[in-house]
Length: 510
Figure 1 (spheres, helix red, strand yellow):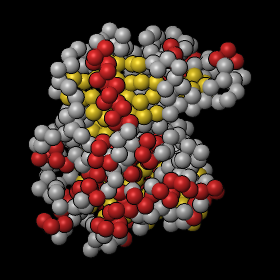
Figure 2 (cartoon, helix red, strand yellow; figure 1 turned 135 degrees about the horizontal axis):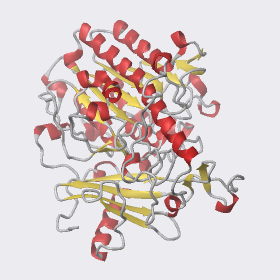
Figure 3 (cartoon, helix red, strand yellow; figure 1 turned 90 degrees about the horizontal axis):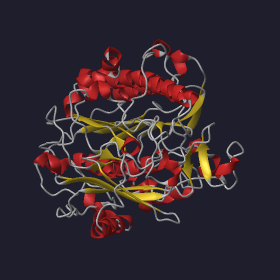
Figure 4 (cartoon, one colour; figure 1 turned 90 degrees about the vertical axis):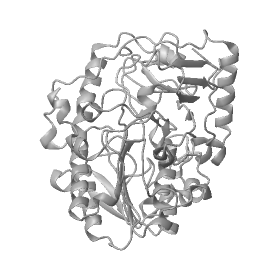
């Protein structure tokens, strides 16, 4: 446990878990103060909350129910930037064909991102550093010369997460990096670029910084000084670890249970490596916060810390991935520090990553309803508002191959992400939509698959936090129909129609 407490030590000092925010500067900041707040958004890659990846700095706080609109990098990042659900921004996977950083995305969605509004209408200096979208820099989508609208300073990684041997777009010009730790380790490069921005930016304009780290995404390359940490750490053995998902979708049922020894060793090793990469993220946060403090800007700066999606390591005998509908893949950390935020506060209101953009725009004083965003600013929660939605939509479109995996011919075509023992993490019909409900009287998840069965999974997360028992076949048909109705409403929503609060029927009991 001592090593766990050491991990990400700076967050204990600098970031306070808080979704029940309170601020005198909400609702039209431009009219109330000439000194508008600064905002820093730190986005990690594949950092879960349900699996204990945040044990160190969640030890004394309640968990925050923040969920992602899709448990995959590019669709989720698109939701953060646009404030929209996937069915409205149309990014369905990590490929160019799936609209990830495609020309169509650039034309239709990039001008409507919250950083574009901050820069164009709010007068903010904007800075981006790190992983943007998985196909950013692709030659068929403008290459590294493309700098999305909304960014004053742009330092973006070409394509997916790496730690060494990568290329950056620095304001549209390619900059290659090698394998020298002192010059090239990406998390440290992002930290140094962030400090440079804080040093040389104008002091007469507010600023927004988005720092998007590679950690803890594979290939899990730790900095040299951290490579021997957590040698005795193993992936959490929660009740759903290495058990058969007997009543779940066929893709979960096909997992080999118990897992092979080699798979367990592999996921334990991956878990250790992921923690090691986060120690450099800890250093990055500490450096940014200290620089803000030295410059006298910390007290007027909001800092958000979150992730694009969760991750699993052995749950329901699935070795490693993040594409499933369960808490370990869709629930992520949300930590906030800022002016007038009360420390050690939490809320049970369900916050989604589509809410980040609207919230940051609200902090800046921009009227969010002018946008077409599906999300809501969660700043009103800090005013003890009783009007807040109970339901969040989660969408995922499965990916597979048209031909059988040569190593797993019995599974046939349509699967992907297969491990050596033929446990496949994705498939074409791993396509689903869920309503995640968090209300005073209910903590539920209702999911439907787009397959021949129209398979349904329902979980009472209060009674069954590890989602061991699918209760879809044991609850009343009327309740299922109401859940189905809420799902259809969310799947067809757009803009303000996605924001209807209090839609859960409290008369439904479980």
